[in-house]
Length: 508
Image 1 (cartoon, one colour):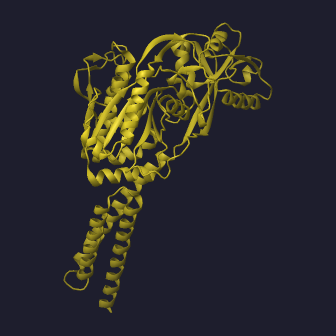
Image 2 (spheres, one colour):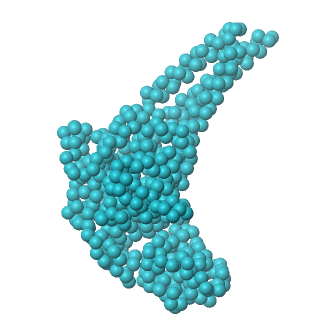
Image 3 (cartoon, helix red, strand yellow):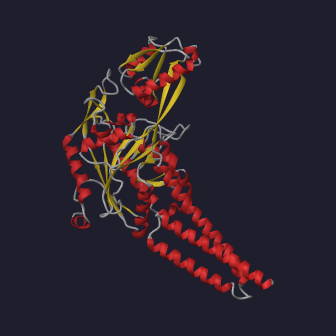
């Protein structure tokens, strides 16, 4: 009787181990991150362990030890399965973060006695006549429901005339998207000290970027990724100016990445979905396109360079700090010795950098990326430094040294960046890299221009500094992008890129 009971117990152990090993192998196939050769090896190991367990349960001398090993193996299978599922779920959350948040704020002068919207229901509310009108109207309608009456609104062409009216007390409340706040504070240095936020309304909408490339195999076909760096901390989904505008042209066949940087102040017409003009042909700074959504930035750059941009990645100040910290710091190349205007929070000293490679943490990486005033060529060098930082992050991300922080990196990834690339495509790229462990060549290119003072679509009453495009450089950059897109492995072996643009090698 006891022997029969032991045999039944052995069978339970074997069934549990078989099921957990089968789930682990099935999950490894499903997530798509792991190359076939490693999955085959995993299946082989699971089969060998299963055979050993069967044999161990057939003898009276080894069945106890076999059961102990079974518990150990099952714990390993559960842990490995959870790790793979957690990684897949984290990437899936990033790819599903396809919303943007517009925060519409109601400001009064600090000396104003109103403390709530109800206190201000008899006031004049200044609003923008055209810019971001849909969000403004929705927020005014919501405010009217709260106060129970129709609000008296006065329209202004741009934030300059709007804020001027607040200071002149022609209106008591101004209403505008927080995406304009940095632009306002650039012109009114004491705006934050002079005003108080009376109320705010958050509006969440789905980002509409035309998905023309759902069936594209990103492991065999070249593609473009727009990398947008917005100039705010905190919530990655909040709309704001796009100060980093880099197009990464990735050719998985030749293992080449071209990073093309466009100055934030490039003076160009803005476009929306379908190539329709947003600004009615009126030019604006490229950075302002981010105020109207990442789709506006993408459509504007597609028009400028006559290319298709397949995917986007969106990061902010907080993203840069957290990504670099979770990677354990990175080594970034600096073209010059310089001291950044941006220092540690609460410290009186600023970060310094030497020509060559610098080990940086998150705060220092952000200071490196934000500096432009200490360079003779200002924003052009900042664009090059963005490219250096992207290279540094990619180098570290492809190295084994990130494994201790890999789980944390994935868990926090949803808050660190947004992308419209599907989970399956990201998994296939990871699979390809783990399979061939290839070295990638990175090439830099930059669009040029000249400084000028112009009115813009977003700020119509005041001439701002802009960068008028050098369309010869735009044409050359377009040619470089299309060349990388068309290159085959044979072409790349013949032409090791004789251009004078900077190059580097990404090592796994």
